[in-house]
Amino acid sequence: MISYWEKQSFLSFDVAIIGAGITGLSAAISLKEKQPNLSVAVFERGILPSGASTKNAGFACIGSAGEILSDLSTIDTEKALQLVQLRLEGLQLLRNRLGDKNIRYRENGSFELLNKNELDVLDKIEYLNNLLKPITKKQTYSIQKEEAVNNLGLNKNYFKAIVQNNCEGELHTGEMMKSLYLFAIQKGVQVFTGCNVQQIESKNNTISFSVSNPVHQNDFKFSARKIIAATNAFTNSIFPNAEVKPGRGLAVVTKPISNLKLKGIFHFDEGFYYFREIDNRILFGGGRNLDFEGETTTEFGINSIILNDLLHKLKNDILPENNFEIDLYWSGIMAFGKDKFPHFKWLEKNIFGVYKMGGMGVAIGSKAGEIAAQEIINSLT
Ligand SMILES: Cc1cc2nc3c(=O)[nH]c(=O)nc-3n(C[C@H](O)[C@H](O)[C@H](O)COP(=O)(O)OP(=O)(O)OC[C@H]3O[C@@H](n4cnc5c(N)ncnc54)[C@H](O)[C@@H]3O)c2cc1C
Image 1 (cartoon, rainbow, N blue to C red):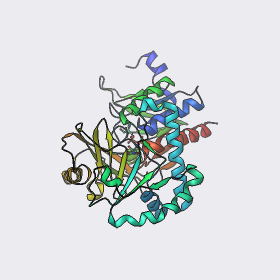
Image 2: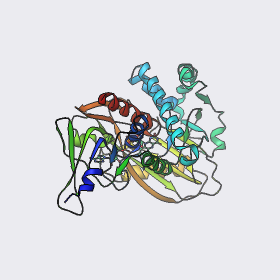
Image 3: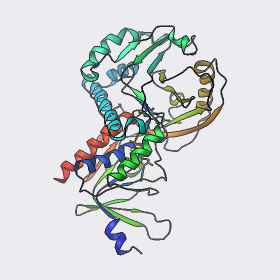
């Protein structure tokens, strides 16, 4: 029941991308920017992207001091610096493509809050600044005066010091993803939603895959010369050897709060918690470390232990001076592995995987997509 026209215009492509998160859409855009004549389509299982890209907190981060120190203890220095470089380049690419106004990019300050057990980070700031200077070209971190904790209205018994990051900002996740989607379409990318790609078959250098058709019993059969899997935490469900672990993240947002002092983005407890101001509200997320095992899942859902912990911290540590009400809470699914470095690898002949974006896809996703696009282009020539 496929028409001649559908067969001609909708079913076969040079490159098919699975996953319409920031990485998949960015890969599609990069392909069209580099080779406008390529036919490129993105297939997304949800009506909206259904992983992390429309669920996150919108921190456009290159890494807090605590996080970089932790990276330096798990991967070698060169790789840790490369990760910072990729994030900086990714963020710049995103901003250049979409424009700061469209994605509501702002630099209202990015702050790491340290508790009394973490104050040794302060002794490493000079070392980190020297290490990162060749990449960021400025003083990356500065230590705020102690009274800054008071001025922000935070719990001064818990937070003892603040390190500011001078190289990162925040954006409006919804506007960013909407702009990215429209930008991809403008570039000539076809985006199909509600398409859960499952069985992929390779034959004679052509790859085909079926997607169930809600209005007819016959599945749609699509084909492509190359595929990019930008499926992040869900990559294992199509490629069982993909070596990635899902990690669910929870976020809550308050209703607007009068006399809110906080502006900017904040992290604490080694980045396991993060909050920011948006539209006079506080968006607060994290707490996965309270139940790593339970949160190693690709199922959306709310862990009540984590939700209660977030509400407790919001009331006692973040907004001790304000009355507030919760407006919404939700979860999203991230992807993790042995280290923080994303996977860039050929999963099968003609299928390139770009996934495992951890908690940094906002900054790195555009660059990761560009790297995947270049791999595909190299393989086509
Ligand atoms: C609560 C929360 C807060 C976060 N906060 C931040 C933050 O402030 N800053 C930051 O940098 N990062 C943050 N992250 C992480 C960030 O959102 C991710 O790193 C980033 O979105 C990953 O993008 P992606 O495109 O690689 O993956 P995803 O956005 O997960 O996209 C993968 C897509 O593939 C689709 N898919 C999977 N399987 C199939 C299939 N078989 N067929 C078709 N489609 C399929 C999925 O539905 C999904 O839309 C946060 C994440 C969460 C959950």
